[in-house]
Image (tube, rainbow, N blue to C red):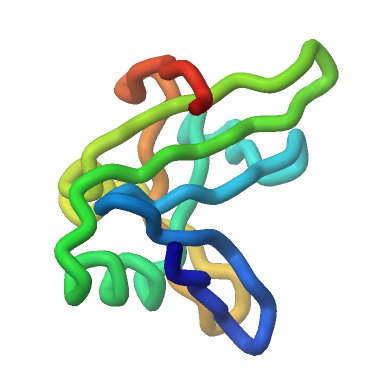
Length: 101
């Protein structure tokens, strides 16, 4: 397992070619109906040959797991800036609900 850090903060892990990251309610972007990933992280994922993003969502009604090809993020037109951090978003309906292992 490889930790991914941005600004010294662990934002996820790569395990067996899957980027795994945990999100909370406040990470859901209503405007795009989904979750964002920083383009800086996407670059790391592409450089390391990661094919899948796994989002573990800890919400009010419990935990859900969503898988999505990295390609959906790289091709997404949904972009939002948080200061200098450009993030790309994929709507949740394009993600496949998965089982956490």
